[in-house]
Image (tube, rainbow, N blue to C red; front, side, top):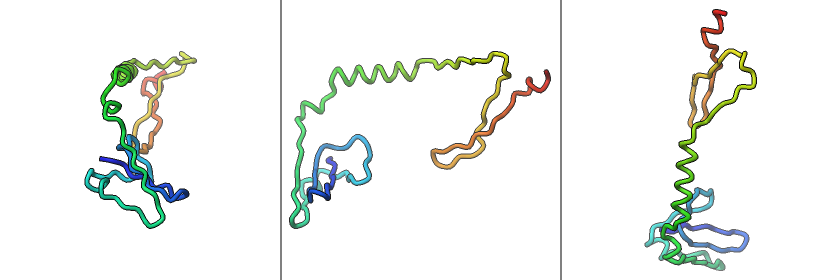
Length: 113
């Protein structure tokens, strides 16, 4: 697997290691297509082949993963600057893809006081 990136300003096609984040002008290619890739006349193809030892997991990778797990498991506390205020919450009322619409909801105990 490889990622193809075009650098239009330099008339260059770059074929390198598989990208870890999506980019709008990058294309992931299988091994056969990355090996057979040709570029338009006047363009240059740059092939970047990483050192296979550099692709193996390292102790830094393991430590970063452990730190991410610790951070995700850490309880999140909310410090209220006004303890006299009645508790409120939000309820999801609609969703469109990754966006949510939240409505403010008062707790019923607040109306009894």
